[in-house]
Image (cartoon, rainbow, N blue to C red):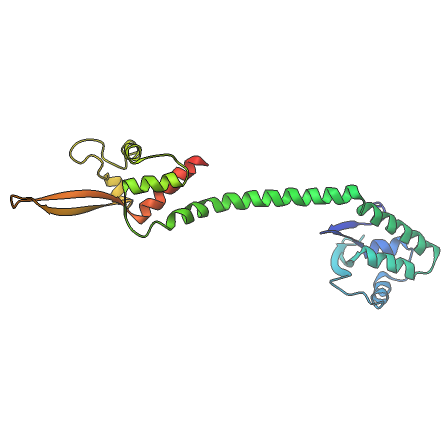
Length: 233
């Protein structure tokens, strides 16, 4: 049938060239005059047909129309001659083939494959946003390393405070040795992942001492939870 008509799929509909139909019906009236008369039978532009430019035999653009199969069948019937009946029968055959169970299933599978592909793309695009959303709810205040370990565990990585401290040291976020062991490294402080809380404690003998506690900032909570969740991906 494509040998007779320039058939185009438009979603779940078939359309064809009005000029092709004009030629197949062997209409002697000029195309533009003929199609203008056909439009008067109640066809709506945008619903039953739409215009486009096609190349004519001379190479110059010519106005053509993509028309629906229903419109084409009705136009063929309006010719009131044997050629019109013949073309209408062929259009009905084309419609039956298009609506056959095999063709309908093929179109459904194609739509399903495209939908799955789009969902996979959207899922990949949404992963960072989802990771951020899971973490941001707990990012308003600074928390202890032990509390961060609990949050990381809730997000899928089985880790405790001791192992998290070890990971921080090995990855360069915390100092490994000496009196400053487990305190944030300069790199981690520049990234604003931690803050150090100082507390002055009065001893019974009247002297004082200062304690320092490492706490994870809101930015740090998001950073580390995202880091561990990406490792699970």
